[in-house]
Length: 260
Image 1 (tube, rainbow, N blue to C red):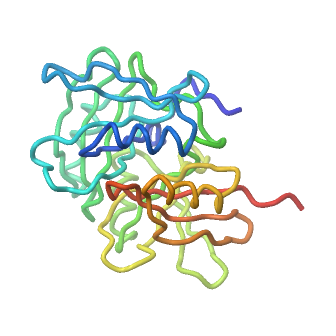
Image 2 (image 1 turned 135 degrees about the vertical axis):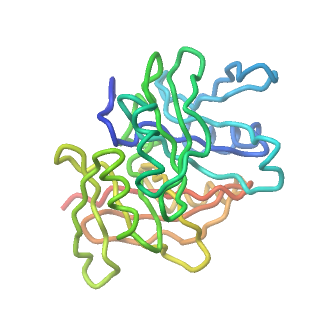
Image 3 (image 1 turned 120 degrees about the horizontal axis):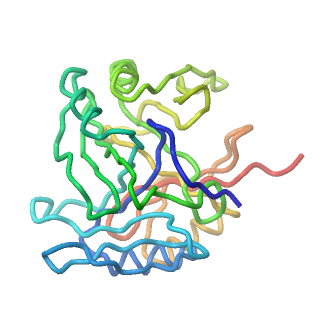
């Protein structure tokens, strides 16, 4: 069991589904990952913000779409922890990015901003108050990896270094495309790579740990999802699959490699 009480600046700390059909998302991910999805007051508009819990610990959020996103497919968003969201957001434009929203308070839970890096990949910043983010991770049914996907990794890395202090180190991938490990204080916190297929816009990926990738793919398809990349093995990493839920939100599965 991996439980968290805080996150260092630059570390992915929360993942959130934005979907036109929250109830469908609640059913899909609740059944797929065994989450107990709880409705919480979402603001003055009378909406709700759903939180998927595993054994009582917050794992991920499910938000409804804003009117300006009408017709947009559902999508997953990654939040990066920051110590002072106002100070970090103030660096974004000078480093070549954009602040799309905020900074603003989310009740007494924390303070956030929505930004884009110079390659147009969107990510959110989170300064924790009462809500640190994901309290349980790196085990079945929870987030295990986050990954920046962009056709210009070299342009993105200096931005994250300047704005958030995220380090990077290129890794060899046995004949595959170059892969970059992202680090905070020498600890690996995620990765960066080019898109695995054409027409994917720059974005941050969310990977969820599962016991059996093939069985989870089959279950996702039964629930209305689609396998975009059927389960495949990555030597030394495990077995992976790329899926889309019934509203089009893309996410990945990661199964630990078999014990030697």
